[in-house]
Each structure stands twice: as C-alpha cells, then as structure tokens.
Image (tube, rainbow, N blue to C red):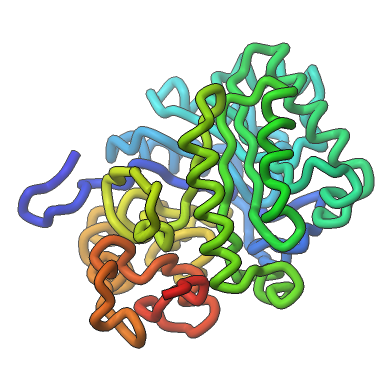
Length: 334
C-alpha cells in the first residue's frame, strides 16, 4: 500500500464522506451545520464508490450532516460492500430505530458510531440543541446491539464533560458499546463561534489527557480511543501510529457532498474533485496535501524536543485559529 519512492501511502486508508450537510440537529460544536453544498444523485455516488474501490481504499465512513437523512443511504452502502469496501457511519441517533438498525445490518455496515456528549440527558440535549436527543441516542445504541451491529460512541470533549468522562464510559458499558472515541474539540464552524464557552485551556487539556490515558491503561473491558496528536508527548501514551502528527491528508481524506476533496472535514481547502479530476495527481501532487505532510516547525514548535512526535499537533485546529497549516496547535500546553 506504500510507495517507496514517495514514502507515503499510495491512497488514503479512509474517505470520510459527507453525503449531505442536511441535519436535524444544530450542535454547538458542529463544523458543517452552516455549510451549503450541492448534493450528488445516487448514480454519481456509485461512480465515486467505483473510483474509491479502483484505488484500493479499504474504508469509507459516512458523516455529514446526518447520513440517515439520505433516502438512498442503504442502497449506496450495499453497493459499496459489493465493491469490497468496509463501510461505517457516524449518526446522532435520532432516526435510528429498530427498523433502521435492521436495514443497517442488511446493507452491510461494519460499525455505527453514535454521538453522545454527556451521560446527563439535559447536558447532552442542550449541547446538541435538541430536546430528547439523549434518549433517542441511547435507544439507537440498544437497537444496534439487538440487530447485531457493532456500535461505537463518539464523545467530543469540552467544558461540559472533561471532568465527568468516566460517566460516558459507564454509559457505553450499559448499552453494549465496544469502543469509545474521546474526540478533541475542533475549532471549526460553530465550534469556532462557541470556542470561548466550550473549549478548554491548554493546561486543562493536559490535565484531562493525563487522567484519560491512565483510565485507558486501567480499562480492560472497553476500547478507549483518542484522535489528538498533541498528546504524543505525555507519559502513558503508548500508541504506535502509522503516521505522526495529524493523520488528515496522510491516512484519510474528506469528501464533500458535491464530490470535492478536502484534507479533512475541519479544513475547508478543496484540493480537487473525485469525479472530475485525476485522483493520483491530487494525492501525490496537491500543494496543500504536501504542505500538510511536510510541516515546518513554526513559533514555539521551533526547537521543541517533542516536535518529531506530534508535528505541531492538530493541523485543522491550527488552521482554524490562525489560517496557517504549520502553526502550533493552540491546545498545546508546552
């Protein structure tokens, strides 16, 4: 899968794919709620799947927007499975009842992630700006378990839950979840607008990760995952990632509803279109992707003794706050 001449993967391992930006929620941290973009029809989506499969990309993950608002979601998923792709999805759970869970199972989803940000119903509902969303989300987890579909829980760490994240782990156990993703707070879209109310200080991020890494080491019945390169310098971090720093543009790419490709959902820089442009040209020669793969230390990253491990932290967060892909992650405590 790697090309020795370029010392990079010959294609991404995952396409994170927003089939639509339509959503029945208006979450306080959402990167895409205020995005507008044309949507492709079913036939064009199948063409994209053919191109993804032809480049031997093994995984696609549907996000958005809310994937279940697309009426052709299960048809598209079944088609992707026929082409040998592994398909997963992230959902807010509102539309995921028992019937939907059975369709998810039948169409071949590998796993489904449900977003839950607090074990307290009122806090979750307020964060998601949708009364009743907590009960619908946990019911979705139960429906997936009954249908025999692997479920995960996605929780964005913020000021509402950074001291009570263990309660989220207990909630996952209660509803037969196999893996919990404790996501770092991005600063894109509504997340940027609400950053002062929801984001932690760099020291609070350090304190959170020190505790969370210890909990991860002590937890045997549940897989706990992080996606934040800024933690690479901390004791207790024992991951051996395929790439250092942000994985966006290296292991994964993002697809917008019109087929445009961006490095990730949180970096709104279009590098090409999967239907109209040559993918290999984009993958190997995009100036934006190559800049992300060859970041230069700037600011306080210059001379830092752990820069080679974190490569400046989250590229999306740096870009959202400064407009420069190579600037230091504003969450960094060093």
